[in-house]
Length: 387
Image (cartoon, rainbow, N blue to C red; front, side, top):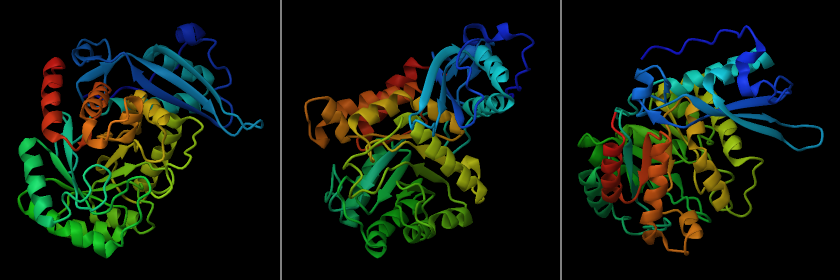
């Protein structure tokens, strides 16, 4: 796929089109700009020169939502303006505001259009399913069902047979209000299961926020780390960098015991982008290759139902981080809150609806409990959105 060339500085202000008068303060100190692809089209539109590709997937786009935000103003309030425009006008507008604005837009466009290589050995040319194996007594949806290693292995085998591309094996519940689990207990739960599937060549992820467990899991054959805390453990980033293992960086406000007490954001979608961007940069600076980083906005982790909806509506924004996008919303409480208060096992329809909408925004991976049903939905979705 040829690189997107940097835009030439426009010769006239009219190149901005409808954006000529938009946000004249965008070049000021403390201003950040963001690009969210909109109006996604079939990839054939790129082949015909009418659009640019989105993250190497099935879609292309020729327009975006341009978001401009100024933080830390004297009055304490953010200033945010939004506009929808063709990419050509947005890039011309950037050069009219400042070189810094233009360069940030150019970097984001490059990240948005860059094809995503295989992640942990899994080809991302089609959406992938990460099946959940909770080796815990207290997970919110299936706690206790698979605490015994034999039961966890049997469940994992069923998920692989149903179409799981990755198995995410966790030994600590991170549901709201959950208490921490000592790393030695966590290891005793997950390592036998990881060894079993790694020996069979299955792509195994370890769902942990503890550096010690990460190291042990990698030694047992796990291909990737899925950390709900975004490598907050001070020893976690060195472990990941030294091992060369791919990592999923997830956003969580607070910690599981208190994260749902009163989550607050200035702008949920943009705050998450800024946090994830900083974590990606920290990983790259520590020696982790960008191609070995995926991001997860952390639906339900320190977020209200309204926050979750706003983040999911803006999911395409996160492709501008240049990493594969994992969406994990299966059976989560906001689904029941938006519906009729259904318990976790009765939230399949809502999980599928939100999951398919995430695929419509180019998400590369879905983390799910109900693999067979999601695989069926994916098959129909793929038929409706051919490459």
